[in-house]
Every structure is written in structure tokens, then in C-alpha cells.
Image 1 (cartoon, rainbow, N blue to C red):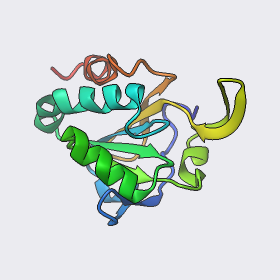
Image 2 (cartoon, rainbow, N blue to C red):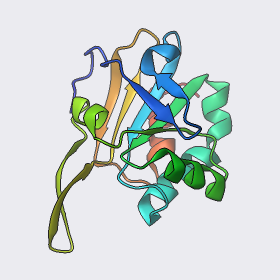
Image 3 (cartoon, rainbow, N blue to C red):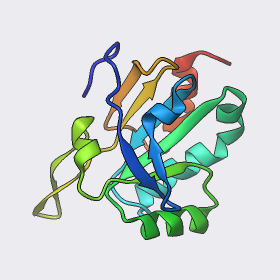
Length: 153
């Protein structure tokens, strides 16, 4: 994990609509940058829906939410539409940005070893500095935990 107080590395990826999105586009706004393994899987859907269900609080606090996985743009669009998700989803197919954020690497599941995205989150402040970092988060409670930890209510 990158350290709190460290400058968040800038990047540019395509969103679920195929549009280029850079982290620097959000300078002046707090950002939740969350990495998740796979769109439309149980845990990832639970996590995304948790952000959706708390969306009013994020909007009221002017916090952008960016979800990053190694899914294709078309898979991200389907994910957004299937669950009516307001999050901006970013396609990191080669894992380059996830690696930059120490959120990509070797995983084991069902006896298989493969490279994939880890479920990690960073909260980045208005100046582009990492404010909070979460490793291996609970998908169900995560959106609420971030709001509580920011202590902005």
C-alpha cells in the first residue's frame, strides 16, 4: 500500500463510456479511488451497491468515487447498467495503474494462481495527497466506513 501523506500518482484510464479520465481531473475535490477484482461478481457488486446506496452522502460532501478493475470498458458499462451505479468505473486491463497503487499482483483462488486486482482503497484529498488507505476491505461496510473515518458528517 502507498502511504498516507504521499502524493497520489496521476494516471489516465478509460471509463465505462470509453472516455479518458485522469486523476488530475479531480484536483480540488476529494476522491475515493477504489480497486476491486471483477465487475458483476458477488463481492464487487456488493461493494459498488454500497457506494450507490450512500451516494447522496458522497455527493453532499463533493467526493468523487472512482472504481478501478482490469475489466474491459464494455464489461464496466454492463456493470453500471445492471445495477444502476453512479460510480465512475475505470478500465485498467493491463493492471498498470493498479500496480502503481500496489493493488495488483499474484492471487490464488480455487487452487489456481493468477494476476489480478486487490480490493484496496485510497482516499485522496483536494491537493492530490493520500489521506486514508485501506487494504483488503469489507465490500459490504466499506462506503459507510470511509464516511465515518472522514468524520465529515
